[in-house]
Length: 319
Image (cartoon, rainbow, N blue to C red; front, side, top):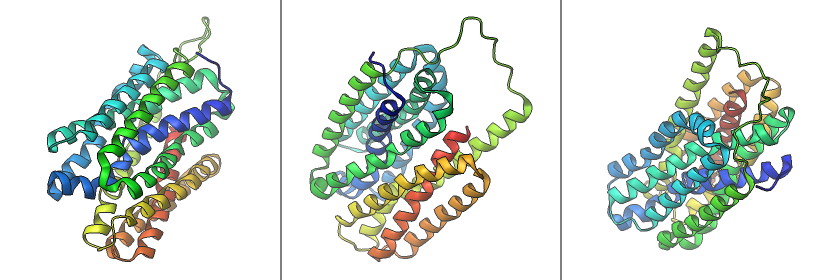
């Protein structure tokens, strides 16, 4: 393993998050129209398939902390990357709903394992005073991945299999980087350190409320990630290339969301959460009301990107 500075680790973490979240999970919505057309899938079937990454993400999240403790940060990150490579490669070769579903399910596992692995590595490499800022930078990697996916859908919309094969190659590079740069231990604990105190009832209550907010927000926002491109093309009548501009707006605004999350975590998280949840609902309503208006749809994407990335970063740092 090669030692990294805090800045270097932030950039590595952002790159791995860009691959696992941006490309392996959220880029799928961009390619729904050509995938649905080529595989002749109904909206009902594509809706079920689109929900699978959320299910596998939640399942992987439940075991990820134990995996990071047992396997170490490096092995958990590598395992996450392997699921990403396998899932992306399987999507590129999908011939029916089943193989496509298995691929996106594997990509969901990839996302569920990656952030806990990076968090465990951060505890070993980064000073505690910088944890919030480093987490915010890594979380912004999702937006970077979405931005990277935009040229793919603009130039490879008709060749979505090649695009996903390219994503699989990038995920393979990420696996190599994770093995080379991430430490094998999950955290550094002095040998004579006292055991951590048990979690109190108040802490369990706060953890439950935070988890509930995060789950509901993720469940609601998944509708945008999965159906927004298909909505503007199918119901709005916009050209397929317009979906690239939509996701570009999401990615650019999401970069600003990382800064908002960092500031909110230091000031007033509750008010920021309420404001961003309102913006999230407004983006959904705006897109549903005007899917055929490119300007309004793009503005909806900007609002969604800022709200989503602010909320995910805020929940991450608050947790």
